[in-house]
Image (cartoon, rainbow, N blue to C red; front, top):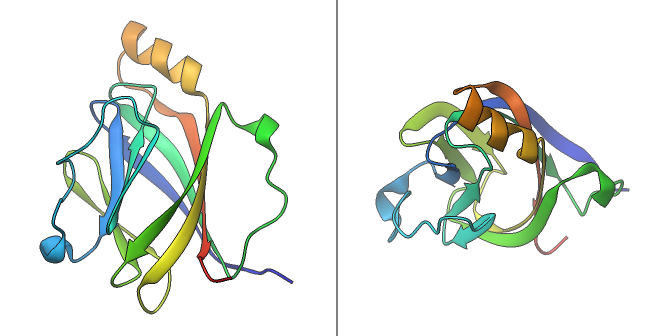
Length: 153
C-alpha cells in the first residue's frame, strides 16, 4: 500500500507569473532559475529544477507538497483547472523554493538524489489572474498540489 512520507504547506511568492523548485545546492546546475524559463508553460522540467507558470502576475500562492513512496491514488482531475506530470532528476533530493529570489523553504524528497515523478495540479487560476490585474497582490487564491514519488516505484 502506497504511503504518504511527508506533507508541507508553503506560501510561495510568485513574481512575473513564475516560481520554481530547484536543487538546494544550485552551484552544479547548468541552468539555474530563472534562466531558460518559458512564459506560459505550466510545468517546465530541467535537470535539478521545476518551473511553474502561475495565472497571476504577483501574488502569494498556497502550495502543498506531498512526498509518497509510490504513485498516490485519489487524484481527481475535476479538482484542478490545470494539471501535468513530469520526471525530475535531482542530485540531492533537496529542493529550494524560488520566486525571483530564493526563499527559506526547503522541500525534502528523500535522503539521496534520483528520478522523481511529479504530478502537479492548480486551482483558483482564473480568479487570481483577474484579481492580480484588478486589485494587485493577493494571498492564497491560487492553490497548487505537487505530489512526488520515486520514478522506479
